[in-house]
Structure formats: C-alpha cells, structure tokens
Image 1 (cartoon, rainbow, N blue to C red):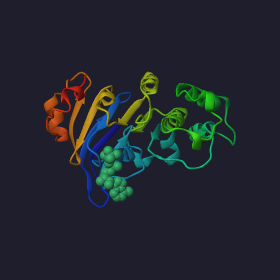
Image 2: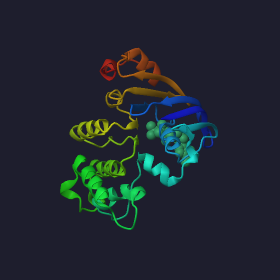
Image 3: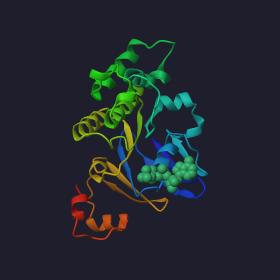
Image 4: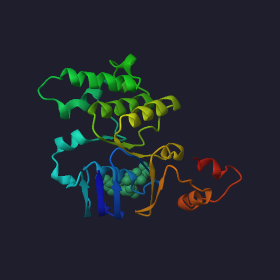
Length: 243
Ligand SMILES: Nc1ncnc2c1ncn2[C@@H]1O[C@H](COP(=O)(O)OP(=O)(O)OP(=O)(O)O)[C@@H](O)[C@H]1O
C-alpha cells in the first residue's frame, strides 16, 4: 500500500531520519514512542500533508505527490487532534466526510447512508443535531472518527483518536474499524491498545527502533530499554508488557 524509501524530515531540527517502511494493504499498524519523537509527523507525511526533505513515499506504487488533494481525500482519512471551534452540529461535521465524494451541490442517497452508518457506529444518533461545542471531549472525538468513517477511505490514519473514549467505545469502534478491512495506522500511547494491531512500530531517536508483530511477546526488559525507565516498587512493568 505504502512504501517509504529512506525518508527524512526536519522542522528546525531533524525529526525523522532514513525511515524505510512497507505498509501492507488492509493491515492494522500502531505507532508508539516517546513524546515528541515524530509520531504525528509520520502520520502527516503518510497523509501527504507534509513532504519528506529526502527520500520518497509511494502510495500504491506512485509517488504520493502524484495524487491531487481530492484523489488523496478519497483514499486517506485522518483523525487528528484538531479542535473545531465553529458552531456546527454533529451531523454537519460528519457530513463533511462526504465532500470528496459529492458529485453535485447536494448529498446523494449513498452519501446519506454512509453518514447515518458512521453516526450509528460511533453512538452519536441521539445527539446528531447538537452543536459540537456542547460535547464532552470523548463525544467530540467520536464525531471526528465518524467523519472519517463517512469519508469511507481504504486508508485510515488515527492520531491518538481514542484517548478520551471510554472502554465501551474504544472496543466497539475499533472492532467496527477492523471489520471494515481498511489499512489502519494509529498512534497510541496506551500499549494495550497498540498491541491490538497486527504490527506495532516503535519509534525512537528519529528512527524505527523495532517493529513487533501481534504474536511476538514484548518483554519487560524491552519496554524498560525503549522508554528508558527503571524498575520501581510503585508499578510492575510486567503489567504494561501485555499480550
Ligand atoms: N510545526 C512545527 N514546527 C516546528 N517544530 C514542530 C512542529 N510540529 C512539531 N514540531 C516538533 O517536532 C517534534 C515531533 O513532533 P510530533 O508532534 O510529531 O511528536 P509526537 O511523537 O507525535 O509527540 P506526542 O507523543 O507528544 O504527541 C517535536 O519536538 C515537536 O516540537
């Protein structure tokens, strides 16, 4: 699906250096790593919103900048940590997911079905006419996920999209996303969620430190080395090395 060939990216200082990575179609990848390591930056590169300083990104064997913005919006949706401060309703925000698909000025029946399905999956039906400004942070995150679902793209990029959701919605929405057979790439800080993915990409010091598949165990020693933490009497690192 994606091929990243030796890409590097810097703002003022280098953030990602010589990253080479193959992302397979319809697989679920998680990205974890310390604060500021470049996880969001990597998602923005995959979304085509940032350009690598060197190296290239191929999407379905073509350079990502070969695609127009509209073509990319039909292929990739991104749930970022954006905050919208305008007084839109839940329904209006979720509908925006259909903009890349809209043929004329109005939504087709197919568009309306996709919007309603996304609202249903994210448990938003009973307040779809509410202003997004009145929502809790978890409800608001569900609206952004629903907009992405309505966009109905084969690739879904998620940046800490579940951080404010309660366990019921984390599991039901993740379950729904996985059953849709999309290529999912999601940033997590919660390792228990990250390990639900087919592959977990550990980023550290601007590089891919390790990629671990779902079936491979993660040892407490690995986590201590990766996060540079000492064992403590307060917590047991084994509790974080789940699955
Ligand atoms: N627009 C920008 N201009 C300059 N530096 C930036 C910009 N955006 C991010 N950075 C810096 O790039 C680095 C990587 O940021 P990024 O948001 O990708 O990290 P992250 O791994 O997602 O972090 P976190 O876990 O804290 O969300 C950070 O040091 C950040 O300060």
